[in-house]
Image (cartoon, rainbow over all chains, first blue to last red):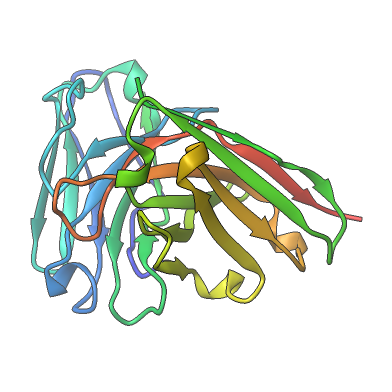
Length: 112
Length: 122
């Protein structure tokens, strides 16, 4: 059970817009810690998708965007494409844990 | 081009040990924090450990403290994970990842290796 909660699955038709939430608390996102997002295509390693809440690394299409507000963060994907079907994970830090980085449980995006 | 290549995975009995390696290239290895992240079969990502550029700071997830040791050799551009007292629940693909330097906290994981599978079973 992660301290960052994501919906297990979301779906959308090609061309549609979907959002994936990452809900935390006052000891992680709500404390001001940054959020990053990763995309994991089937059978491959995760890839950095959004860093610092809303920044895209070079090469990531602008169809992907991130935001953060209060104790939550969101990943939005517009103009959904078949190749977007993947697992998506948020990452942050929780001050109540003795370790370092924490991931959300992951969200499986299905393109209908 | 940044490359991270893990090796050392395999089948090990419960209570056994294994040492994972990650060979880095394409960047100045000694300038970056490095992490290990694992993913159990069909499950999500779990951060395992990280290490500062000079090896002076190391952090671990609670479930591996006292059993796993992260280390690095900057002269060899290599990252290691010594895993002792292995348990069935340590079965996972282990990824080596570079921590970014964009100034955000936590640091992002901007490059990942392809992973190496560790299976703990009798």
